[in-house]
Image (cartoon, rainbow, N blue to C red; front, side, top):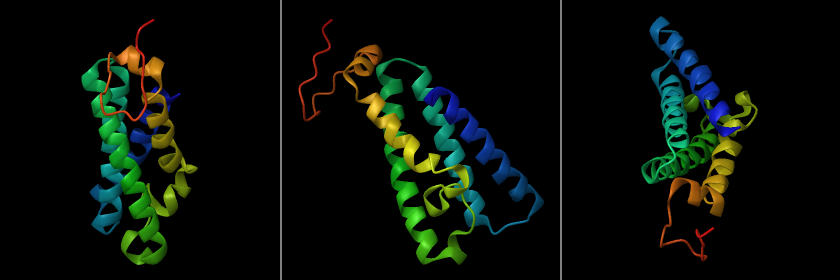
Length: 135
């Protein structure tokens, strides 16, 4: 599901931001944030496709950053709506069915699942619980 939904979000937010930026129909911050979101979605897709430790760390890093951005921009969209405008993260992703809020959390849960860790060949020593990767 994640490998399909992330490229779809990357395409929809990226095209929307690019068209608005190229036409000059916008202030730059909202569509710049949407372009940033699209790049996060694309990078997460790449990390999810390549099942190796590098892909795992890339995906985890991007999904954590995406979650933080969604929460910060989503909160600011309520307190400073004129500044934030209509971004992919506005109101925690309301324009996109709240996928920008829910999707990275689901992605992180999936990435930290023991079977996923095994598939990626990752055994992080800093995990708070013991993960056995032996079959």
